[in-house]
Image (cartoon, rainbow, N blue to C red; front, top):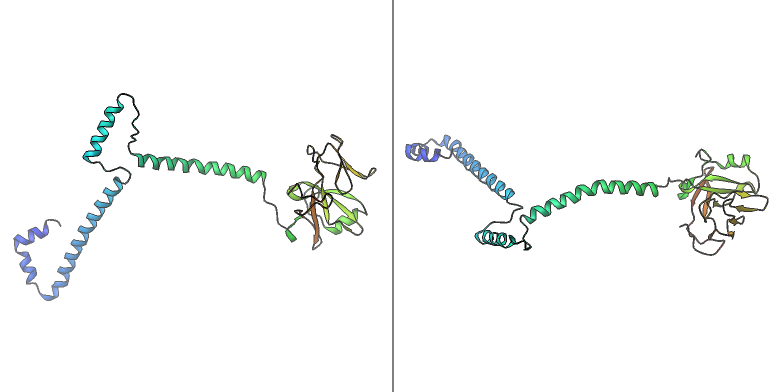
Length: 252
C-alpha cells in the first residue's frame, strides 16, 4: 500500500478518481482514511518498540561513548572509577529479586506470628467459652451439678491456658485464677488442706485469690473475668488493676 499512491499518480488513476461519480466518492475517501490510519498505526508500533527497548538503557552519545572508553582505559590499572554500566537495569533487577525473596520470607514470619499469637475465638461479651478437659464448652448448669460451695477446678481458658473456676453459692465467682506459676511456668494445684495454691516444683505458694505469699515466684497468678451468657460460662481478659495488689496487671 506504500507504493500505491505513487503508482496512481503516474498511471493516471488519480485523474479517474477526481472525475469519479459522486456515489463512489465516499468509498474512495474511506479507503484513503484506512490507508492513513494503517500508516499511523505502523509508525506508532515502531515508536513503542523503540521506547521499550531503550527504557532502561541510558542514551548513548558521542560524549558518553568517549567517557566510557576513557573510564575503561583508566580502570585497566585496577583503580575503581565509580562507573556502573546499565545502572537502571541493575536497579530494576535488584528490586525484582528483593520482591521475590520477600514473599516467602513474609509467609514464614506470618506463620511464626500466627503460632505465637493465635487468634482468640470470639464469644459473648468479648469472652471465650470455658472448656473442659476435652475442650468442650462448659455450661453453668452442668458445672453446678458436680460442684459445691468453695470448689475449684481447672478449665481451659484464654489461649487454651488453665484457669481455676471458683464455685460460690449457686453460681461461680466473677473472676478466674490462672494456674501457671509465675516462677518457671508449672501448673499450680489447689491444696484445700492449707487453703492455698502450692507449687510442687520449687515451693511457691499463693493465697485463695492467687496472690503470691511465698517465693521464689515473683508475681501473683493471673486473673480473668468470668461471666455467664445464655447459660454458657465465658472467660475474658482482665486489663484492669489487680485488686489483690493495686498494681497494673503484669499479664496484659
